Image (cartoon, rainbow over all chains, first blue to last red; front, side, top):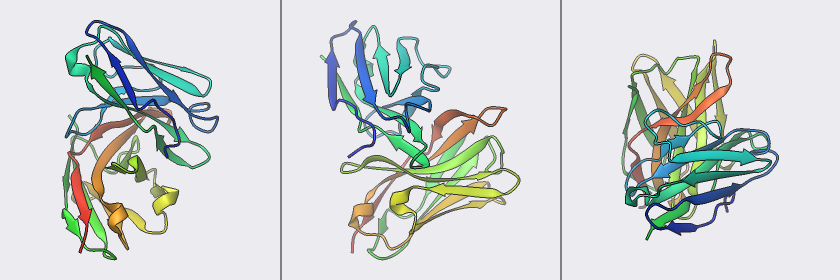
Length: 110
Length: 127
């Protein structure tokens, strides 16, 4: 069981906006940044969002992140077929003195 | 451009030690603005951070509670690489293992968590 909770699945149609949530606690999201990753089948995860709402260069501005209290969200607007992937949140946990991940959300583009 | 190249066996027998190496290009294992990590992924445990090493005038490390008694991550500055050693493995340690970089800003605060990853190696623990 993961320390941070994500919905196991999400879906949307092309062009739609979808959001994926990540629920944590005061020791992780509540006091640290959140990071989001996209993982395509058979590949390593790719950093999508850092410091809760910053995008690395090369990541489309269709992807955005936000954080409030002990929860965070990843929003994908203008959904495209190539966005179909697994998405993970991560954060440092002060109580565990380590990085914790969410269980992942499988996004399906209908 | 930073690249991480992993190497090591794909099959390890139970009770033995799992050892993997991550060779770094485009950065330095001794950089004071980075930490070098191992992460694994399995269907049963999802993504699991195992630990990290970093250099800040001397070497330091942090390990996940779940593997703390069995793990060591070591640097090799002559080859600019770092290695994972996980002893007394069981079939539950079967997973895809990744190495990954963490970057810190000029004030020493975490900036980019796992911005570069190795290609991953599937390690199966079986006799």
